[in-house]
Length: 152
Image 1 (tube, rainbow, N blue to C red):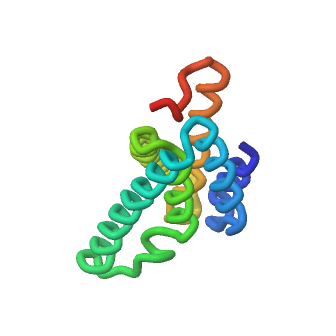
Image 2 (tube, one colour):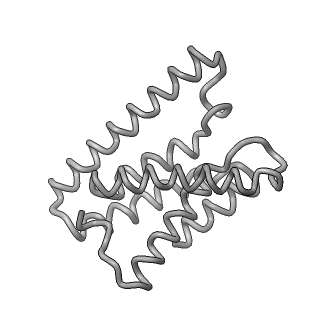
Image 3 (cartoon, one colour):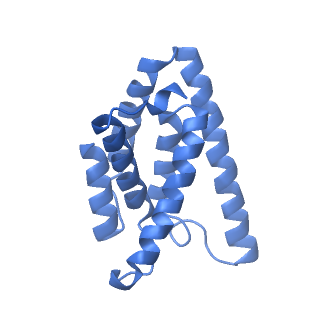
């Protein structure tokens, strides 16, 4: 949770996150995921999820570079955002990942639109908002004794 909090605070304030937080978070998520699944099964989930993220990023790259005629990296999507996508991909089973990924993006959009006037920069702190969403999701499952995201 502290790693997510650091990612959120840094991304929202500075639009930059220390790179070493992503591997730390990825290792923590991988350890949590391997507690619920066999190693081979968890590896297949992670590979499939990383393929999904790569396809999404490929489509975003083509859209940004070909249709919008803008640079992709650090203009349309930051490196920290991409790293956070892959960290989420290795952290959950495929169905849980798709649900968490989609709803964290919707949450980020809603929060940005709500607080748009208070931001000094025009960019969206996507990794920060997604980290907040993940903290809220884990808090909900822990405090209200809801089913784990790893059983799906």
